[in-house]
Length: 166
Image 1 (cartoon, rainbow, N blue to C red):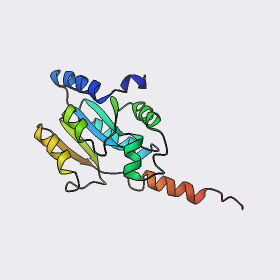
Image 2 (image 1 turned 120 degrees about the horizontal axis):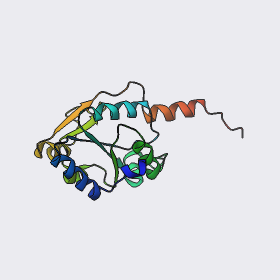
Image 3 (image 1 turned 180 degrees about the vertical axis):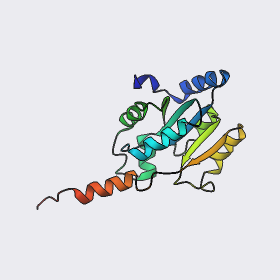
Image 4 (image 1 turned 90 degrees about the vertical axis):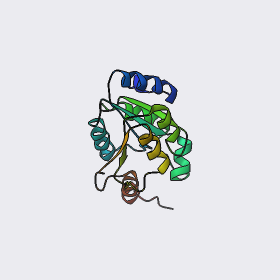
C-alpha cells in the first residue's frame, strides 16, 4: 500500500496537475526524515490539515550527507521514504537529489508549502519562497514539537549506550 504512494518527481507532477484540475489543494513539505519521530508525525499531520493531498519531498542519501555530514543519513532513502509513505496523513512521497527542493517545487507548483518551525519566515530560501508565491501559493511555517529532533534522539542514544571496554 505505501509503495503506491512512492513516485518520481515527474510522476508526481502529473498527479498534482490532476488533483489541481479536480479542485483539490496540494500541500508539500520537504526534509530528510532520518529516524522518524513524533515531531515529524505531528508536523505532517498538521500539514495535511492545510489541504486535500500531502506530498512529502524527501532528501536523497547523497543530499542528506552533503547537508548533515558524512555520518548521515542513519536510515537509507528507500527505507525513509517507505516509512513516511506508511503514515496515513501522507498521500505521496518523492525522493529528490538536490540540496534544496526548488526544482521539484517548480514542477509541482503546490498551493501550500510547509516548513517546520526551525525556520523563521526570513530563513526560508528566497528561491523556494519565490517559486511557491510566484505560482500563487503560500509558504506556511508550522511549530515544532519541543525537544523532538533527530539530533536529540542521537544524543540520547549515545548518552545511554553502554561503553565498550578496551
